[in-house]
Image (cartoon, rainbow over all chains, first blue to last red; front, top):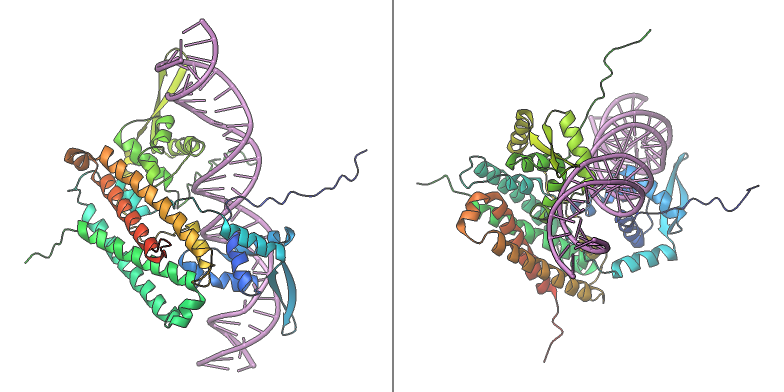
Length: 194
Length: 194
DNA sequence: TAAAAACATGTAATTAATTACATGCTTTGA
DNA sequence: TCAAAGCATGTAATTAATTACATGTTTTTA
C-alpha cells in the first residue's frame, strides 16, 4: 500500500537557462507583468538577448513554483486581470548569486557569414567580395543603429550613471561593430579604381 | 477502405539548421565518417561552431534520406564497419546555394558576462572591477590560444592560400579578442598605484 | 600480453527556443 | 461609434542542441 510519500514534481530548471536571470534582474528593478517583460526584449534587452512571450509566461510560472517570484493580480477596467510579478527575497538572492559567479564561458560566435567564409577556399573565389560587401552594409547599418541608441538612451551623464552596465555594453557593442566594419573593409578590394 | 495513398514521412529539416551545411561543407572537401566529422569540431571548426556526435549521426541519416549524401561501408580489421559519407550532386548544389544566399542575420551575442553587466547599475558597484578583471584574463588567454593556432595552422603563405576563408575568420577572431581586451582594460581601474 | 586510449556508431532523455495557434479586453483615433 | 492598435495571457508543436546511456573494435603503449 503506497499512498502518500510526497508526490512532488522535481522542478528542475536547466543549468544554462540564462533567461530566468534576465527576468529576475528586470523584476529586481520594479514589479512587472509578463507583457512588460516581453516588451523589454523589444527595447533595451533585445540588443543582446531575445525571448518571446511564449517562453516568458511558462518561465514565470516555474519561477513562482520555485519560490523566486510571486504575483498580485490587479484589475484594469472591469475584466482585464494583470499579473504583477515581483521578486521574493530568495529570488533576489538567486540573482545576486548569479551575478557574483564567475563567467568563464567564451561566446560561441554562431555567425552564419563566418560559417560560410570557412568554405571559401581561395582568395580569388568570385563569391568572396560580394559576401564581404553585404556584410559591410549590414554591420554599418547596425553600427548606425547602435550609435542612435546611445544618443537617445544616454544623452546625458545622469543617464549613464543610473544604468552604467547598460552603457558599458552598448559602448562595447558599438566598438565591436566599428572594428568589424574596419576588418571587412581591409579585405574588400575596392572596385572603384580611377 | 483506405489503403495506400503514399505514406511518406515529410522529412522537413528545419530552416535554421546550419549544422547540416557544415557537414556538407566538410564532406565537400573529402569523404569522411561520422567520427571524422565529430573530430573536426574538436579542431578547426570548434573555434566557431560546436556539435557532438549525438547530433551528427542522426543528421547524417537525415541527409542521406533527403538525397544529399550517400555512404559506403569500408571494413577496418575484421569486424569494424566504417561508413564513409560523400556528397551527391544534389548535396553539392545545396551547399553552393547556401553559400550563395545572403546572410542578413546579425549575431546575437549571448555572452553571459555582458548579460550580467546589464544589471550592474552604478560605476562604483564593488562587483564591477572583479568582473572586468576576470574577463580580461579569460579573453587574454583566448587571444593567446588563437595566436598559437594561427602560427601552427597558417605558418606559410601556401597554407593561407589553400584555406583562405579559414584564415580570414581566424584573423577576424584574433582582432575581435584584441579589441575586447583593449575595451575591458579601458574600464579597468588599475589598483597598482604607487 | 594486458590495459588504456582511440576509433566507431548509435539511441534516449531533457531542455531551450522558435513559430504557430488561440483568446479576449482596453484604449485611441478616424 | 466603430475599427484598429495595443494590452494581456496563455498553450501546442516543433526543432536544435546537450548530456547521458549504450556498445563494441582496433591500435598503441607500458
